[in-house]
Image (cartoon, rainbow, N blue to C red; front, side, top):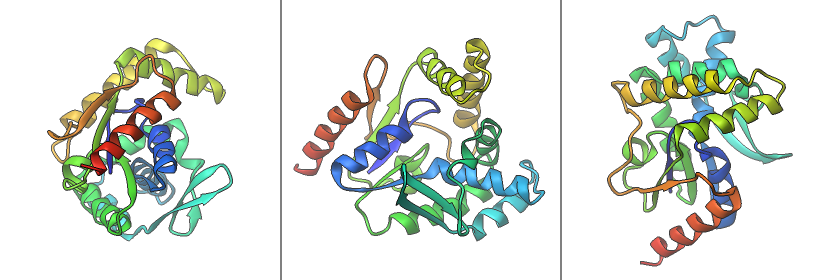
Length: 219
């Protein structure tokens, strides 16, 4: 199944718990773009160098492994789960995702990882590009104000800067980049269910979506 949506909508948390509830495997495609940004920075590859980034992305092999604290992301044999969550790498992920060379390479890897089925794949173009034939598609979102509030709380909890207005501008800029990029822009698939998470707890969102997915599967 495909779970798409903008930054800060709660996709990662909801998709991970939804996979557990349904007995599926969780695949975080956003973590793959973050990994490209991380490895590019380490190897001296500019986030503006589309060709070099594409070659880099094409050579990375990913694994999503259940471990201590949940699903761990491995890239080229290294657990990068914590490193890719740093704020600068989050911004880098959006920058490297602009390039068709990167997206094409990672789409091939995503299809390889999901070809056996029984997965919840989360990202920004899963239902439109990666698996347009997915049986169940969800577009998870929330208002800009709500997404900025969540991101500010996350940063504050990690000891980072948490100026709400600055975070709101960052969220709006991320939305603009993701929606306006020429290759695989963020958009809702026509047959996806749009679901707003404002005012709902994570368990409430997971419970409602799990019920909907089960109903879709029994049609």
